[in-house]
Image (cartoon, rainbow, N blue to C red; front, side, top):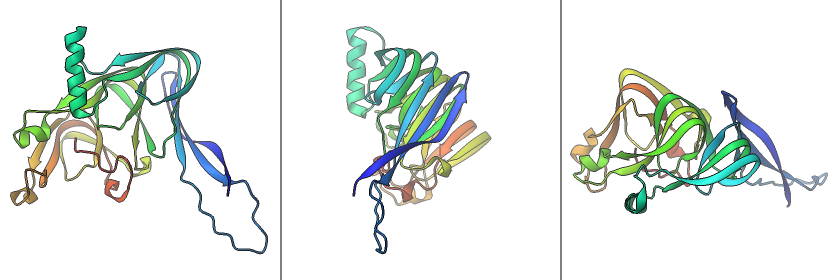
Length: 263
């Protein structure tokens, strides 16, 4: 059976003249049902696409751009945080190769609408208010407004098991809107506001957190009999004041990000 794809606005978020819009594509049969017969129908999975309405520009994960409309100039910018020159470039390249974190993002300057490649993952929209957000690997899609995209070296688990290598993650700093991708629908996320509090998470359930929180990896009660070589028996701890994007239902979903490594 053939289908046509119809786009509707699933959700949107606006701030300071900028807007992020999530378009959801649903499949509809091209053939009319045959009267008097029972017909089983299996619809293809829905797809989602991010539309970025900007008056100043946007930053996208490398490879995320599908097309754009408007007076927008495009260039590749480094997100490695390393200094200029060949030495800094090589250091960044080695780090990116070792961690899987992309060195470059796509920067767009000007006014117009930018569309990302369709994905079966869900798109989570949020806003930064003059703060920094540390994002899990593979989750960053785009940001708009006065937000710079850098890198954060997370020592967490490496320090716990005695390794000197930290894991590099995207770090968004400033004010504006951002979009993350996840196999989990946004409705299932909990945005936790911590006020001089402690949050401990057993599992890979956090997709992002503000860097105002002190992050550490600690041994859980299971760690007394767990294996340090495999990472079993460790929990993530967040202390202080800030925000955490947490999804308790992540283990119930299968998808490309279902096996995201711990923050």
